[in-house]
Length: 314
Image (cartoon, rainbow, N blue to C red; front, side, top):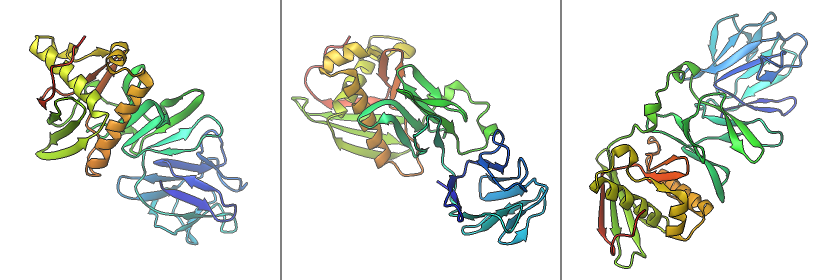
């Protein structure tokens, strides 16, 4: 995350994509205590390529001792020193100029800011009740027991009296018109399972954009196998595409002999494994879909090799 630090007080501020400095607490993200500062003094913002500063004050803003032309957009560099209203006031230093990342900014007192990077869970990895990840379109998706939604700047996210506000790392106008169909939009993906005769070992591979990714053998692959088998079973018996593969969570718990919390952990571990193997430039392909009390495997192009008789499905 990109930070700016007050070298006089030690205060560190994580820059939002459009960050206002000023005296007015309701319109400023960072409040300036200098009485000469304006209510909305200056804005530091990311234009998609670099960080810029725009002054809107009465008494001016200075970068490395040089006054900024009011209304003009000045490029910022790592190490730049900024003064608001007076060269004799506090000095703010740009710690870096890396691109911004989407954030969860705490609403509940005592919580920390969370930088979102491909995949995140709340309240913890040991109890993943809410999962957030980037769709192939680059939007942040939130999965919880209540369903799936695309996050927009300002949305509240949390559980157990712990609440954060989502801030997206792109201009707000880019996210205003988001179609719900983007939740399911993804590259063509082929899924391949290789299952031992006793079904103790399940290997998982997938192909995406002409590349093959081998996830090897993991315990959580058996859950994926059960969901994939249910999808295949429904396709072969003529169930409509919108209804294929859905399994009630209680029934799935009985099939696996595990509670819902354990199943959520396995789904999270699978998603984390996929993130770890994909190139950094790729976003998480959606393998699991949810709706009220039900879950299903997201893809239809599935091939299963080996295994015993097909597990009885609901």
